[in-house]
Image 1 (cartoon, rainbow, N blue to C red):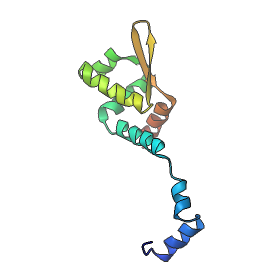
Image 2 (image 1 turned 30 degrees about the horizontal axis):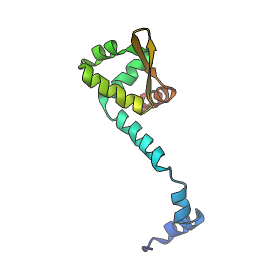
Image 3 (image 1 turned 90 degrees about the vertical axis):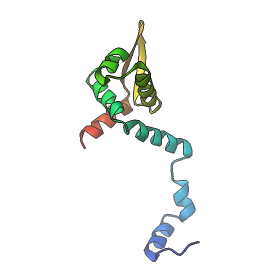
Image 4 (image 1 turned 180 degrees about the vertical axis):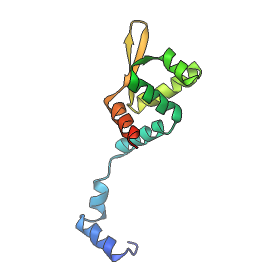
Length: 114
């Protein structure tokens, strides 16, 4: 093992050693989901969608008007937000109405307080 500073080595030993620390890290699936969340939040357009949906549920046509983008770009952004589990779309007649998930609401509340 590489030479490490004594205080860090001691803390590591108190935690059960490096293997014990590694065993408490999130698994690859969890890390991938968390990365997806951060990637989804890393785009101003997607943040705007989340803030708009916090105001009220919206159909894609209104979201497109708010953002001023094409259908294909909107579809991409909505897909990213859905994959990150920040929004959900529910079919109502011929429309899909989008709204934030509980995670989406929590994230917007947290961002709003920064």
